[in-house]
Length: 421
Ligand SMILES: *[C@@H]1O[C@H](CO)[C@@H](O)[C@H](O)[C@H]1NC(C)=O
Ligand SMILES: *[C@@H]1O[C@H](CO)[C@@H](O)[C@H](O)[C@H]1NC(C)=O
Ligand SMILES: *[C@@H]1O[C@H](CO)[C@@H](O)[C@H](O)[C@H]1NC(C)=O
Ligand SMILES: *[C@@H]1O[C@H](CO)[C@@H](O)[C@H](O)[C@H]1NC(C)=O
Ligand SMILES: *[C@@H]1O[C@H](CO)[C@@H](O)[C@H](O)[C@H]1NC(C)=O
Ligand SMILES: *[C@@H]1O[C@H](CO)[C@@H](O)[C@H](O)[C@H]1NC(C)=O
Ligand SMILES: *[C@@H]1O[C@H](CO)[C@@H](O)[C@H](O)[C@H]1NC(C)=O
Image (cartoon, rainbow, N blue to C red; front, top):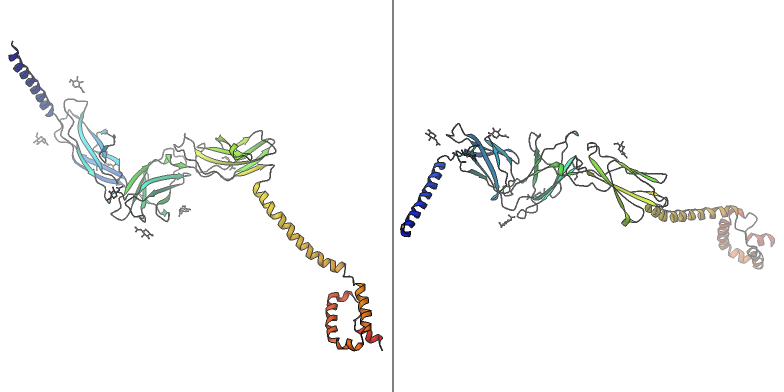
């Protein structure tokens, strides 16, 4: 065979192969399943959608029909492909992004037919882009209430009054949160389950505004990851020999053995504070320095066996035990002792002055008396009479000063008058 003849043959062979491939494709193409029809969705809860569709027509009875479905959020597949025989799928929704849902029919365990084309439908967000609340974070405080906060979207006015709704499996209807902070960026709602509960439903949270311009947003929160215990209370310290025994109250909303504690203590030096981990509501510190003052505080965190939350409570109030006087006590002493001393001194002084007057009456100065007696004898009675009014006043004052205690002293001016005649 000459090479010139070989080339067309090769070309013909190639064509034949191509035709075979196309024919095979057509053959399998004929077996491509028809797709599901009437794909639709409806909200069954604030943040939950039920996507529904009808089965494809003319599917042979030998086909073990299944539907595979997938979700695409803002062009990104979520990678949550599911296969099922039922003609609906329930999914969460986020509302602030475009959500596309796609489904196709497949015959399970059969390579006789090919899966159908995808059928899809999408849920477009409403409102102005960038107006949805952002940065939603929630803390489940002491298994009693949920405390959620968020920020306004960058394109939302800062006084947007967002409203929070929540729902979880077990609630008939969604509930509206009512306890907002002043700026409507935080809301607290009570959330508790029976103590024996060990699995908690996901909490759907919808934050929206009555205005059509504000884009709503949904989030699903797993409450066990948000648990934060209450601050331990009633911290009590006692000293037994060389041991300090520490005890505090347990939260009564937590099941038994679901909290562990950190006890932090130091004796004066804050940098040398020690932290010990405790599983009960008490502990003791052995062989302490009897001459030091020890200061304690405690905080709680959930045990990983019960909750997948790493959140610690606040530290409890500090309590101290030991020889050295407590600093506040010391401070009070510094302030009050001088005050008490000063006040009592003043009181004492006043009291003493009165006492002195009572016990030790002012002793009349003999010189004064003599001077008066002799000095005034030299004066004539005329002047005495002239100055009578002045002397009367003097006398009055002196009498008042000396009071009845100086009974022996007779009026100064009376003496010459009586002696002179
Ligand atoms: C979803 O809708 C289908 C069809 O209406 C219904 O049969 C199914 O029970 C719904 N699913 C839920 C979880 O409500
Ligand atoms: C299903 O099959 C019937 C008859 O075999 C045919 O008339 C009909 O057009 C088919 N429907 C589809 C959607 O292929
Ligand atoms: C497809 O069919 C062939 C022959 O019928 C079989 O050997 C093979 O396992 C099947 N492959 C599948 C189900 O993927
Ligand atoms: C806010 O609005 C501007 C203008 O309409 C837009 O370009 C921007 O993407 C928006 N911000 C967000 C976070 O969507
Ligand atoms: C939000 O509420 C406050 C007070 O209740 C009000 O002054 C403010 O105008 C409200 N904001 C909007 C965007 O309506
Ligand atoms: C609202 O929340 C505050 C804490 O921010 C709380 O002190 C108050 O008791 C709550 N009010 C109601 C009615 O739950
Ligand atoms: C510590 O826990 C025990 C058992 O739960 C309880 O009886 C005790 O009162 C708790 N201690 C304090 C200080 O509350």
